[in-house]
Length: 201
Image 1 (cartoon, rainbow, N blue to C red):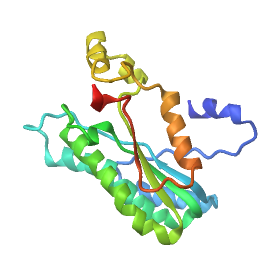
Image 2 (cartoon, one colour; image 1 turned 30 degrees about the vertical axis):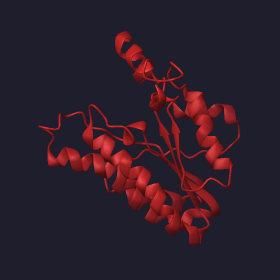
Image 3 (cartoon, one colour; image 1 turned 90 degrees about the horizontal axis):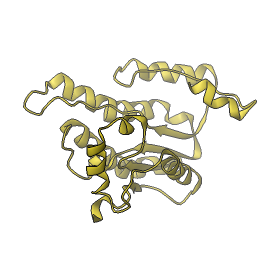
């Protein structure tokens, strides 16, 4: 799918690498790949994330730690490992979540780790300052992806009723926010919430 999507870029050179963010072995694997291909980065986007919908009363420590590793530990230690491959003047982008701001009704682990992502961004500003690297996050609310479209109509309507704009965010609207944070060099340490006015309804 990714290869087909990238055909529109013509002769642009693209490397595709698959890695599992729940495995610590993926960190040196990615580092080795970048080194082997002599790749330096202007933008690093941590968009992958995981959740666990096991009820709080039943969730195991292993499940809890798995979500923390994928959403917090993996990006922290990958960034540490490949920091020397991010260009001066470059930027790092994280995907947070509206559920890191408002209580998540299903996954406690997801909500807590996304809150952690937001705090991580704020704290990384000082650590990345000497490298002249900016760091920001986008905190999406309800985005009209295929997963959301497959929800029952009554659930979607209930969500829309909680959003001031009365609709889900489109993927294109969300991607424009990432693009803005990459291109505008004065954004630093910001959490941009894409909620459509969820908190005002």
